[in-house]
Image 1 (cartoon, rainbow, N blue to C red):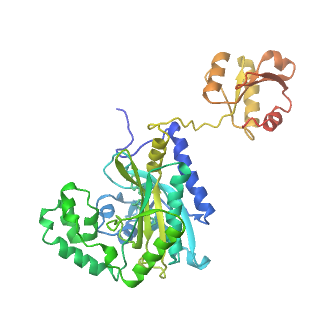
Image 2 (image 1 turned 120 degrees about the vertical axis):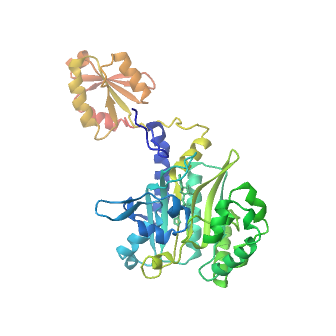
Image 3 (image 1 turned 45 degrees about the vertical axis):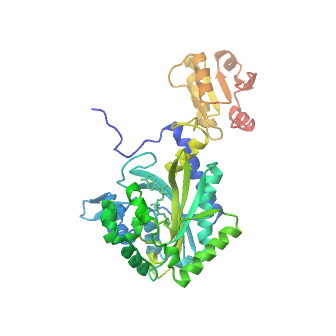
Length: 425
Ligand code: HAM
């Protein structure tokens, strides 16, 4: 029997690892430049944390969580998202005492028992930020700018920020009442999921992708026409700041998010390429969550982006299929030994040189010619030949693999010389 990775999970092979790392490093760099500090939380948490924050009636909690009982009888869940754990840590460690706004970011795997498809996995990775402690609409815009910034830095085009306001606990219930009224005479003709949502969370009906439900959604009341004064004014400020900052966005009054904690601003970065629309990232405000999880009230806003989704978009932008050309290989110097007698010396020098220069050698007993081929394949800039003749004179041969030029170098001080020559360039 041959083992395979569990359904919905995937291995990131060396040729993809470069893009994977690039998405993460680009995001980290942007986040840190904007004053966000990294927070690492456990991969599993108490199940109740997600039920309470993401919402017990959401698809994530109802259908997609990996929940299990550990050996101590505790019910725990693999985290399906990063916001609730960050807020849990913020409260647990009293981070509010460290300053007015806590700007935090995270990178790591998330788990959802979703139906696997292109860009949809059961274990995937997110990068995300959370700014906790401020109602400032500038922070909402900062989040959107950073999400868009990831795409821009990576050269991913055909992206647009979709924006909505989902109101708050004061103005949403009357709007949900209006929705129910509107849907009541139509719901029998709508899909099974819409019927369930109609009872549990009618807002999610707006998000239905089933073609036969579409006609029923035309003319449905828009939440942005029913915001209270505070939410309307905040939404207006967010749009004004976006405009003044030159950040384009598409207003989408039917944008609702799959998690219950949102208040006011909700947004997604939509990638439209080859006829398909994918959400590369999403987020919004969650002004009640800290209090809901037991902390002193603190408004907050954040987003997370799907690393795998950005990798796919990046590969599309470069015109590569899965497993593009990114070599993910840092080796710049390759040590060639002409006979087994010189191998140990080459090995010892390699270990020393590695402190300053990425270097590798042959471990497969290859011929000299094949060792050069390997050096080429790895993209090395220089080969250093450990041959009996030169070694007898206390020297090695250095070959510039780009120009073919050869020089003799004394073995003593080789590490320093190669380091100075920029063997890493
Ligand atoms: P979310 O919209 O559920 O939001 O997920 C954010 C992003 O994670 C999605 O836009 C998508 O790129 C990626 N993603 C979600 N599910 C999958 C999957 N099954 N496979 C691959 N990628 C996926 C959140 O998780 C919120 N915590 C965002 C947030 C942060 N809101 C405020 N702060």
